Image 1 (cartoon, chains in turn brown, orange):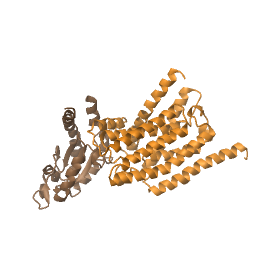
Image 2 (spheres, chains in turn orange, yellow):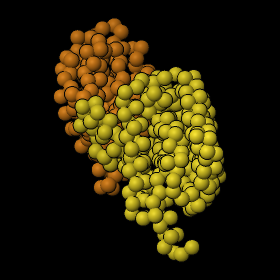
Image 3 (cartoon, chains in turn green, blue):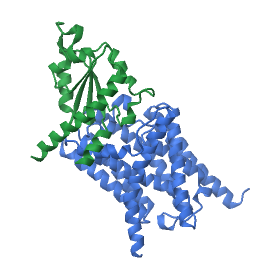
Image 4 (spheres, helix red, strand yellow):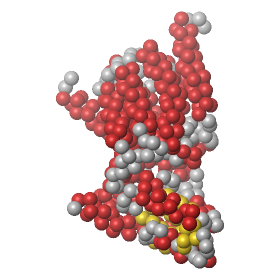
Length: 150
Length: 287
């Protein structure tokens, strides 16, 4: 069990999805992969594939068009998984919370584990969320392991 | 054969894919350093495999896991044949069957990405298998098809054949300019796209076995009567070839699948032919 936990904490594969963002937060998510922030040093790689992802990085307020797709991607990701809402819009909907075509924050559609504030969210804050998320992920993994065995 | 040799062979069959895993970790580290990044730890591929095995299984159909398992068995059998000093040609065909199993696994899922990935993997097989086959034929002409009878001197007589193994490894390691099957930015991870969790781990370990076989071919080119020098030389040669593929990966962009096939079937086949012609000419004493 301890070995599994260690392996998990060293290999969080990420998937990024834009639910209607202005691309500000997206640029910061991509900046994570650049030499300056190099998130691969934590073992994270961008798989762009829900079936192989562990951590979903969602940016932008959820538009009504994107709602089904977001739910679909979430359901295709195997347990244990973690959802991080990146930026103000993904966290709450921010200025778009009462728009006619917007549901609001990501947590209106799928369960969110961590919220990263900022407009746009800083890459440092995203790395912080990712590292913080690993301990949260361990708790969730313990839950799914228990379910699978019992 | 005595017991010690058997134990050594079993150990090599187990350790060779693990060495490939470590080499892939070194590859990621060197690539990161070349891009001015820190990069993941060297044992990262093992963390990835461990993590994948701990994920909850998610399967589309039973064919997927059957073909992934078959790919693993065939590649392991190919490596076992190679290590046991068996016939290179048989090992090559067994390994080729394993590669086709992966394509069948990709075709078993009703997903466009998986399908495109499978087609492209077939094109990649079309590109590297003839070259690998001719390289093995050249080794057979010069030494023997039986790994146990090959002995030394291949590096001096077949240098161009070793050179053709570099683009073959570029394709097998999924590196630019020939990372056509798994082209990350276009079709995600190609034939692997519908695999997840433990099944992806099986497919990945199958790939390690395949790479172990092809790196094994590379190590045949160095041989010395002193076992320590021999093993050190073989490892050094494999590392040099890996390093060259990493450099190629970092200085090139992806080519189209057509150009990959054209390059391999002209330059790859051509180099092996030129090597054999030169050897023939020199041996006949024309010059």
